[in-house]
Figure 1: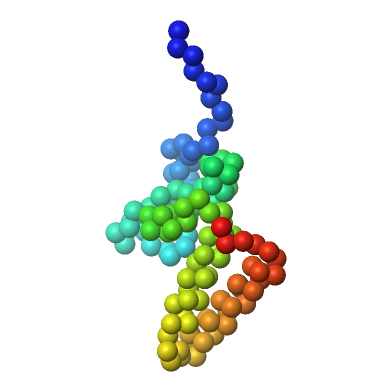
Figure 2: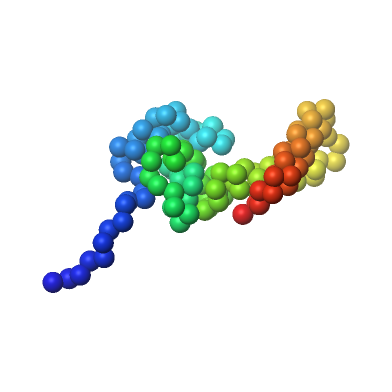
Length: 124
């Protein structure tokens, strides 16, 4: 007889849970808002990654487009958020003559990143 290791609780999403998450999120990426009607592939992602103990539950799931899921990798939500704000801030700072809205967004990103530092939330 073949010995099989005891199966631990399944951490992935079953088909029913995946469907509920996609429906809850309106069949759109929760980061950029794009959906299959925009020609992007949607994936159900673990907010808390599986390798960090995240389970395949509705509350731990979110809909991401393939590009955002690839960028998130195994970061948790706060780490992924920080990564996005760092990227946006860098892009805004590269604009030589920002308009009023871009200047406002620079300040917003700077404040958010300062909060990450103040609360000692690492970037991954």
